[in-house]
Image (cartoon, rainbow, N blue to C red; front, top):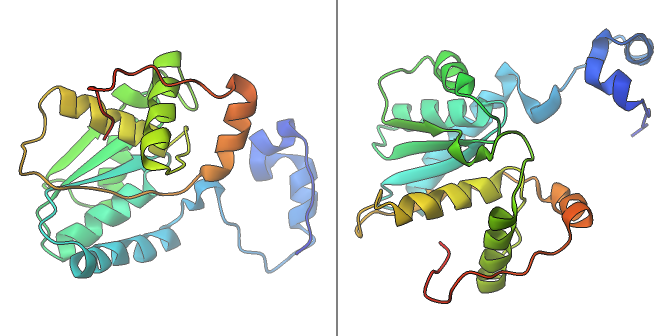
Length: 207
């Protein structure tokens, strides 16, 4: 592997920036993997999750996943539809706004599936946090010993937790959370905000 370092300004412009274009011209047979892996070639691999899920987990009523580009959710939607899995797909956007819901439907070509989408727990935008959320994550990790990235998957768990408090789920429901990774962002977030001490009451347990 050979790494080419670019400025933040150039990266924001991606291949439109002249310095990045100069790098690309060095590799005439290049294949560009977009940020987030968001291209049409990403979908078949995600579709396979549905068949793996059928083999490993039974009687799931809800499937929860984070969304940044929408491609993982779109692939899951396609896989669930193909395998006739009726569990509700719950998509928790890491971005503010509901535009990803249309992206997911357009990519998958599926509009009649049991599909739930929300940006409520994006907390106002990408990588946005607040003290209550950070305390929730600290409490969750303390109780489960499971590290969670705060940008994507932490917000899925936070959303599920709050929906549970609102009575969204029945006692017999079985929720499957698909952890899509991103743990590499955890250290940077902790450096910025520090380790928050959990202050949830003991009788107010996390998911």
